[in-house]
Amino acid sequence: MRNITVSVDEETHRLARIRAAELDTSVSALVRDYLLELAQDQSNESRFDRLLRLQDETLEAIRARGGGLRSADNLSREELYERDALR
Image 1: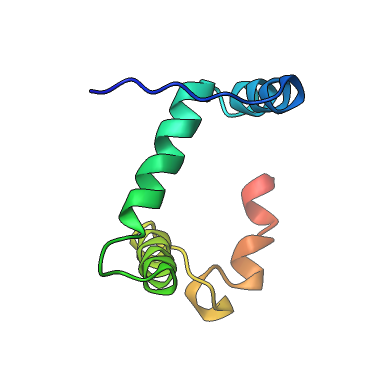
Image 2: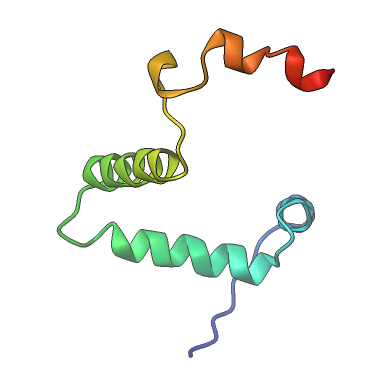
């Protein structure tokens, strides 16, 4: 693995540290992830195609868990608000 040095102003560094903390990661990991994404965008897959693929993967994961985006895919109103189960 190669090391690189990047210079940024104090405010950018402060904001990056805050954002990294919010994401429970490091500034280095954020930069690495960004550079990986940037490098992958140079592949044959366009940004639109990559987003479309990620959308399809997300929808498949939702369906695999038994959920859906249509009301027919989920619990009926009666099942959702079944009062007998609470008594």
